[in-house]
Amino acid sequence: MTKPDTPVADPKYRRLVTLVAEAVNLQKVGYLLFWDQQCMMPKGGAAARGNHMALVGRLAHERLTSPEVGQLLEDLRDLEASLPYDSDEASFIRVTRREYEKATRVPPELVDRLNRIQNESFQVWLKAREAKDYRVFRPALEEAYAARRDLAEALGYKDHPMDPLVDRFEPGLTVKDVEGLFDELRTALVPLVRAITDKARGQADPAAVLQGHFPHDAQLAVGREAVRAIGFDLDTRGRLDLSVHPYTVDISPDDVRITTRVNEQYVGQSFFACLHEAGHGLYAQGIPARFQESPLGDGASAGLHESQSRLWENIVGRSRAFWEFFLPRMKEHFPSLGGVTVEDMYRAVNKVETSLIRVEADEVTYNLHIMVRWELEKAVFDGRLALADLAEAWNAKFEEYLGIRPPDDLLGVLQDIHWTSSFGAAFPGYTIGNVASIQLYERALADHPDLEAQFARGKFDTLLGWMQRNVHAHGAKFTPQELLTRVTGRPLTAEPYLSYIRRKFGELYGV
Ligand code: ZN
Image 1 (cartoon, protein in one colour):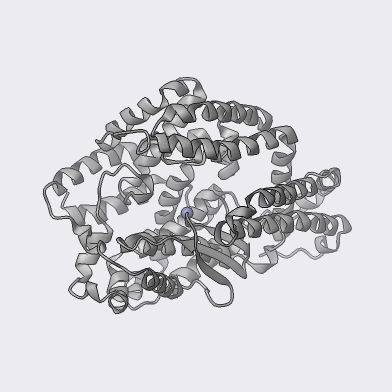
Image 2 (cartoon, rainbow, N blue to C red):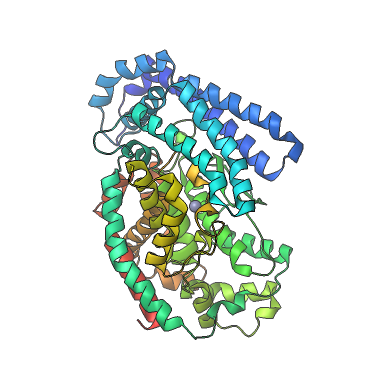
């Protein structure tokens, strides 16, 4: 990394660093309040906690958008232009400017309105789910879409009004990029899913071995053993706790908290949630400490973060080699698995099934679940689909892509809160993560062809070290396309993902 001699001494640069550090630290206080709310807080704390979180959110926003920050960013343009693009200092100024511009374009009233809609619509969503009736949820969705259109206008765009919403999650990516990726995936995956499900029909359920009784504490112990094995530091720089929805909170690279949920009848749920969140956690623990109080101290994007969780959950955790290493350990915790072979386990954790629920979907069908959501969201945004017709459109598209039709709205359009909990365009990040995970892994494999043999021996530090050097080390310096091009020689590309899926599941299902 090129280290310039002067900029660190530049008083304006130092001042910007100090001001932005306060904004970032306030944001991290907000993360901690959120973690506590999800994992520790008694229910009664909800109202007061809402006030606390709103306050630190507002303070962080005020710090970042202060006129002084704006002036410093202007004054530092020459310095930035004189530095190498990938230097810490130029990257700090560039990424701070990007975040500053996004934050100042949106009027505070609109931020409040979006937050209010998020909070209120959650209760409406729960009611609608209880009634299994989309019509209960629709008014909240109307409000959310009106606010998102205003958000898009405030942020500004050249081609498509959803471009700035996509850019909030995936800096530099546009609707056109997402569409191009999805077109390629759709063409290949829809017939592949048909072929696999035709083949699997009438066969014994390979995942039956994952059903039974698996005691809660033993599942947590297994989860801890697995995340330690892949290199997540649970002892001095991380924690694993329980919550309703698994997630990862990074307070700093030395304080990364992951969560899981346990279903005693099904051992796969908590196990893969642990590996998934530990993947996010490894990314967070791998970001250099010098970025800690800076906008660079984050992943490159939501999709790139997801690439790391999918890497450990799917590419590693659902490989034969991983189970050669881990099955004997799992049997120590669950003697009922005594007769299960590595091959049984490999087939069980890679069962392909056209299910109605996204979060339970396998590697092959998962992206079709995302596609249904993205296409409908975009159709609503384009005015081609009325919200009144959303539930029916969902069912029709689901049947077209996955060959099954949800029996009610609860198993259909009402399964994700994302429709109103994000500010739009939150879905593509999941697919971008799946695709990027393979693209990065193939590059790592080219450098270290014996990775799988290493997994079978319980050795994961070569792969982790590669990701740390090539991905984690840069924090948020680069956009997702810049990072992928730098590391793999090309931007986000569907082809490596599709050939991985064809190879792996072709062999498993004989198609
Ligand atoms: Zn994730």
